[in-house]
Length: 94
Image (cartoon, rainbow, N blue to C red):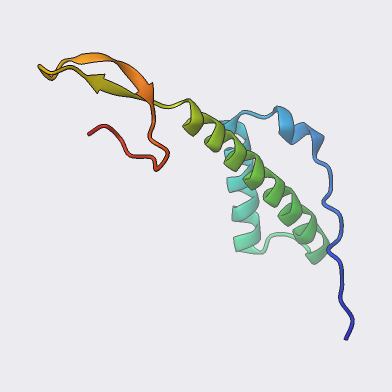
C-alpha cells in the first residue's frame, strides 16, 4: 500500500495583509463561483486552494479578536466596576 503526502500549501502572501472583511468578501466570491460551476476544473482547484488560505486567515483573525475581548465586572450594587479577561471557556459575564 502506498501513501501519498499532501502537496505543500501555496503561499498567498497578499492574504496576510488583508483585513478580515476584505478576506471574507473574497472568500464569498470564490464560494459563489464554485457553487455555480462558473470556472473550469483547473481554475476551480486554484481558487479552492486560495479559498482555504482565506478561510485560515479569517480564522486566525477571529481568534486574535477573541483573545482581546474583555468582560465587564460588576460591583456589589450591580454597576460596572471594571473589566477582566474573558473566561477560558468563553463565558460572558451575563
